[in-house]
Every structure is written in C-alpha cells, then in structure tokens.
Length: 69
Image (cartoon, rainbow, N blue to C red; front, side, top):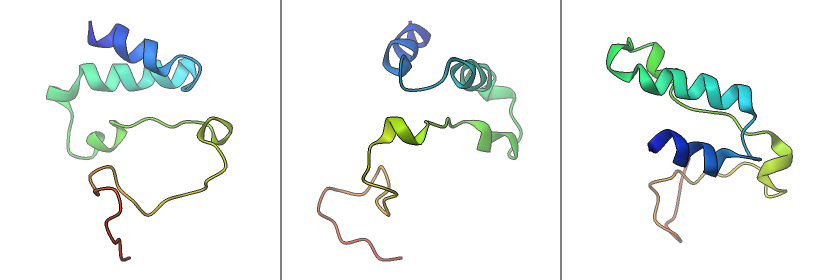
C-alpha cells in the first residue's frame, strides 16, 4: 500500500531507477547500519525542482521562521 502511494507520488518526478533504489533501502530499514541510513533519501533532477534554487529551510522549519546558518 505504501509502495504504491510512493510510486504514484514519485511518478514523473523521481527517475524509476532512483525509486527502486530508495524502495529497496526503505524495505530494509530495520537491517541498516548507521552508515547505510544515509541512503534513506532520494534525489530529484534539477529540472523537476523549479527555478527557486537551494533553500536553507529544512522540512521541519515553520513557514516564515527566521533561519540562520
């Protein structure tokens, strides 16, 4: 069920090979070493991200919050 949802959201955004790699890692999450946990992410090509460029906001930073680096 989660795999189908991921695929439906990733379709056209994340390359199929990258989807497969991520799903393989995600399904082995209980067996991963600390170093392997860094693989529990995926990449998206720049042409799918838009023209805004990199952001210093993380996914857990509230909208409008001041971020200092």
